[in-house]
Image 1: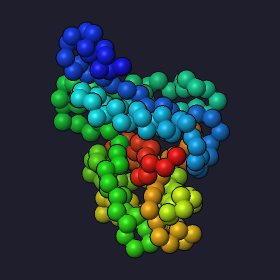
Image 2: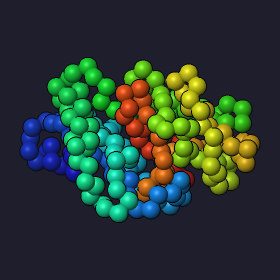
Image 3: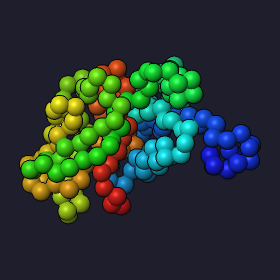
Length: 193
């Protein structure tokens, strides 16, 4: 759609700002087959296109209203994206975004972009991280912030290969943020169905 509109309007790679789907429906820690999580992932993949940016709203939705009433925070996050990407202001405009991971002993270490001055959790221990081994069965995981990374592990998964974060229609209590308070975008390190 973005490429088509840019081609049709003949104005080059004009900016496209996208609001990622907010949390909606009954809160749960994890949903293997969440269509909303997959759609959020597809929205994140659009960032491969030039001149695009994504405002993450995973923390300001409404479980019973598909159109959350909190438009102020959505508008402020879009404004940050516009100030940074369109007007080239040197500001923090995004929460943490998954960059890479590597297996480290019985856990997985996650690396992020857009940390500002570091990673933090809003409201206690990190939540909504799940981890799996080669059997592709995910288990609730312990996640801790260590030197600008997140280390994820679970006793039920001694040989981990994949991590997911906030992978649900409405991930209950997802709370990974950067030092400015902007939320991390949901992600997965695998490509399993």
